[in-house]
Length: 155
Image (cartoon, rainbow, N blue to C red):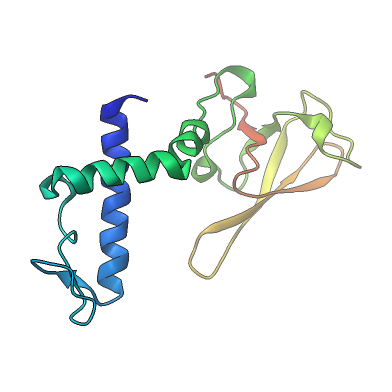
């Protein structure tokens, strides 16, 4: 594991821990005091002592978070590149990356569908995209499905 990468992840994990502690009513103190809700590690990762920084790095490694983060991103290119969810707009033409995965629909490999509607939740976050295909079939796609590509996607 690259030590610079591990330091960045440990820093991020530490900042999340600080936020969690502060939201629980804890604050920085010269020493740990549960009754007073003070903790000496509620500070920037970069100002922590070497012992606490080492503990953060070891905890991040032991948690498996690094392995998860290593696998969470992919940047596919070419005709099978999924589109960015926020790039989609109603009326836009899209294609399925793998038409074989849609059961019960008559969608061919090279068919282009049209985005019929984009559904959002009460916070305005996109939750569903509905696509109408030349066959008349209507399919629904959720964030994370990564199964739609823009018509002009040439990555």
